[in-house]
Image (cartoon, rainbow, N blue to C red):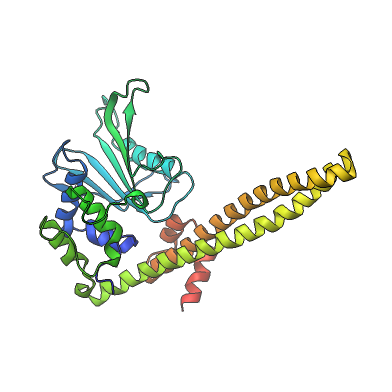
Length: 335
């Protein structure tokens, strides 16, 4: 039976890395991530709600946002499921933090570096194939020489990290191995390698959680599992709808083309081509519909959790995109 927190849950990730009491864990991880580049001696957590550029702009919410002793601003995100435009989303988040550094009046655009670190429990097809860690910087296209160190995005695709416990050679590799597999451990590995893993074991031990924290953790796990189940069901129904629609459209297109070219030849060629095109189009539409339904269900579950924490309807609407009527209906269902 698992003994440690699942770091892929929203509450679990923030419990491990996003609190003052566990700040040294985050510092150790970041120093191992940037080994050989710079050393972070201390950091301060910042406001995770970055105010928009106008009154009507939605706030941007990060999992962890902090500033190092050297002034570097760091965003740390844990993304459990793939989503369209995830790379652009990270760029948007990073850019907003840079823009918020602006000063009214005279200013020479002397900005502080902003780094975004994305833990990804999925593989994004836009990133280099088969590469676990991707570092993106502003660089010359031909020479690869860095032009500016003020923006950097690091993507860590956890499914592509395949080293075993015995194969991990650096503390950074040990961190990734632990975070990827921690919810399955009965014991914490690497305790003799680095004292930080002993602290990690103490912080993440499920047996040490208070009842209040355990309730929050279990709610977070339930939301994560419900979102995954909804996602899988949406994909399944999307594929089924896509196949059905594809067959119907394929038959229609094939018959039309076959009639134009001749009954015998058209029935052989048109139906086959039409079915292939129709199935492909139908599957794409079905999957897209399924993703949208899964995202909507995820927002509903998040709204339930926020309502249980006493958050206002306006705040819930801002963070989930749900309508006031939907939030009211959810609130009624909880009573």
